[in-house]
Figure 1 (cartoon, one colour):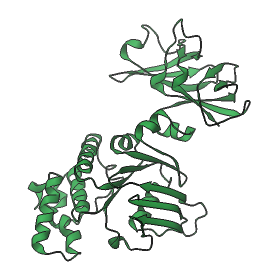
Figure 2 (figure 1 turned 120 degrees about the vertical axis):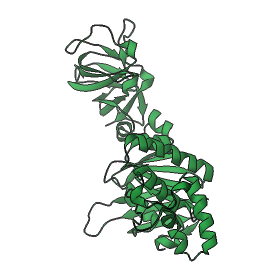
Figure 3 (figure 1 turned 180 degrees about the vertical axis):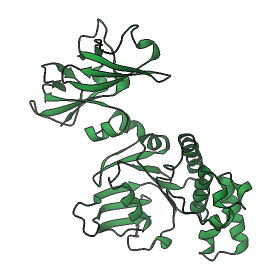
Length: 355
């Protein structure tokens, strides 16, 4: 039995027409770290609020360890919640903030002290127990919020974009901290973010949301290597896309008559609209032996980004812009914006989707 089971969940806000969550099915296993990833308005945060009990579903069922909980108030669901805004009490010390969930549960004072000390030790903040939130950095405040969510030993921890307010360095540091805690504690975690890198770093599985539905649910590597449709291919990682008509076995005929080969995802009839997707790192400067998937292009710009060159090129076959990622030594000497730069890619590194 899954720890969390969501069955045909639907949420339409009062006065709304389009569902925020539309007939959603999802299972989360015990001890799993699952991330709800998607753009703003895709339904991921609403799903988390429905799980937490802060929103009521229009229809559908949410079960926790087999027991329906969609009518239970938040405090009876036994879930820890970490918000983007931290939601710490400014008048309380760090220790008092962490103790709050235990105080409202009427736990004995000695037990509270023991639990608070243990929780602060887990997030490496025991030495700051007597400080006020305003005396802490953003990363430290987020650790306090995490300790408060863990202190009553919940079965599930829900996190709603908890790292989005932090700068890049702190965000990466907190990602590693959350990974460590998840591994040590084995608690089930449901994490919401619009940041694909964050999702790929933290998750056992990622659910990619779009218009209130899950487009694909898979491991980070599966999402990146085998996206199920153009939306997932475009949202998870960088991707170049080219439209045309399907022709033969996994081939695309472009508007200028060129034929490009890829791996067909799903089924499509010859002559129907199709989209070819190729990641920037799978493009290379075409050589004499590249007679197959070859693209005539003009270099627009070359940006040195330390460990690679990021090229902006204009394809002649469709008058569209693509990006390429080349190793430092792979860019031909003397090539400059405005010059021709033919590119090539291997068939196994391209996907062909029905448009």
